[in-house]
Length: 128
Image (tube, rainbow, N blue to C red):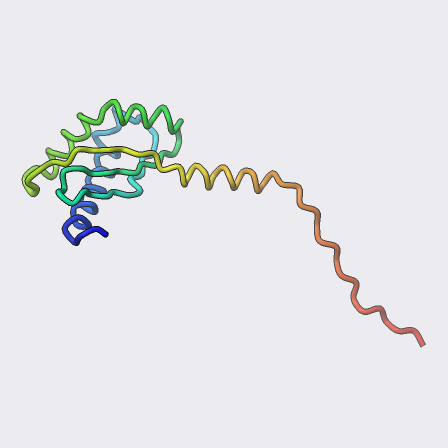
């Protein structure tokens, strides 16, 4: 269970990283949309575990680009929050596959061939 302090830092880092990926991060991810889906802070606030989701691109390629530029992203974060925190946390990125999985399942479901349910016969009128 996260403390109030951890939750406060998580929200701050999630917000700032979201903005970094929209602005400074364009050089890293291009036109892809990056969503910071979740941030979990370690109790000492020295490590941020960050879940990322990507739209408009190859998840693994984009994730590798983010991973390879982790130092640069941390530097951007430091410029934004450095005056308000004692320590800029180390960043650990994880790929959040839930959006891609949901998109995949939508595709699978839309391709299913489900026969129409037979219409139930209404009560036949009695003939006298």
